[in-house]
Structure formats: structure tokens, C-alpha cells
Length: 227
Image (cartoon, rainbow, N blue to C red):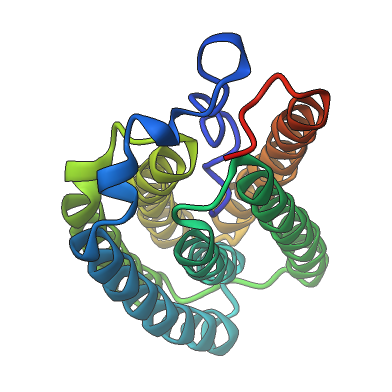
């Protein structure tokens, strides 16, 4: 549920006439295999959060800090997805509101940190950024491969897959920032990537909130099935 999830998070949640697609995927929602994959993804993301936030603080990299909070947000995404699996549309929409709030808070935190680093002229360690960014990319790519089987599920299942896939692309941006810092000797490539990630988080939070509120409204009007 990181910065890169906003546009697709509920892209397939309404279905035709506001109907919930989870009925089509009831077997997958109850699948022990899918739950095991989500638990594994949760563990990987929590571990990478600890690695990246430690490295980001140690070397003063705003983009690593942004990516670390992205891993934390994804951990919340997996935990909430485990909670709402098999639940009715209204509960999944409420869970999405929680995800949106965390995305918004994350975006504001990264934006403030990036401004602070820019004002201080912080130049992070490019080699550390490169090593940690590569490890983060490998972690997200591995989770994306695990989730590939369920990429066409209902809105919540689809959002989990899309977030993980797009987070791997975000890791490549961190690696590009590392190259930029190394080549220029300036912290601006790091600031720019972090600013983009925070902007995506804030916009994603708005989009997810709109979709979730729309789904809740449809449920209350009786246009979406209650169970």
C-alpha cells in the first residue's frame, strides 16, 4: 500500500452496476495458499522497513526513508488484506480508508523530511543507497512473483498485486537517485525522487479515499450486495 498504489487500488472494486467481484473469487479469497503468501509478504516488508529506515537515517537519504515507509505501508496493506479477506464490500472499503490515511501521513512525513534535507544540503552515501536499493528491489520483485497468481482477483487482491509490482519500479527510482548522487556529488537527485514519491503517496491517498467512500455510499444505498 505504498506510494504507487493509488490509481489502481480500487480499479476493479465496483464491477458492473457497483457489484462486488469477491463473489466471483470466493475460492481464492478463502485460499490458505493466498493467506500464506500474504503472511510471507508481510514478514519480508517488515524486515525491509527496518533495513531501509536504518540505512536512510544513517546516511541521510530521503529516498531511502521514503522507500522504508513504503515498506511499512505495504506491511499495513498486507495485514489489512488478511483481516478483510472474505469480508463484505463495506468492510473492505473501510479498510481502504485506513490504508489511505497511512498513505497520506507517509507522504506528508517524506515531504517534510525532504525539505529538511534540501535546506541542510545533505548529501547521502551513494554506495549505501545503491546496495540497499538493490536489496529492496529484489525483495519487492520476489513478493510480486509470489502474488502473480492472484493478480486478477477482486479490488483488494488486485491492489495488493499492483502495489507490490509498482513498488519494485519505485526501487529503480531510488537506484537512479543513487547514480545521480554519485555522478553529481549533490543531494538533489535524492531530494527529487523523494519528492516524487511523497507526491504519489498524497495523490494515491486522495484517489483511494474517493473510491472507498463511493463504495460505502453504494453499499448504504443497497446498490452493492451486503453479503
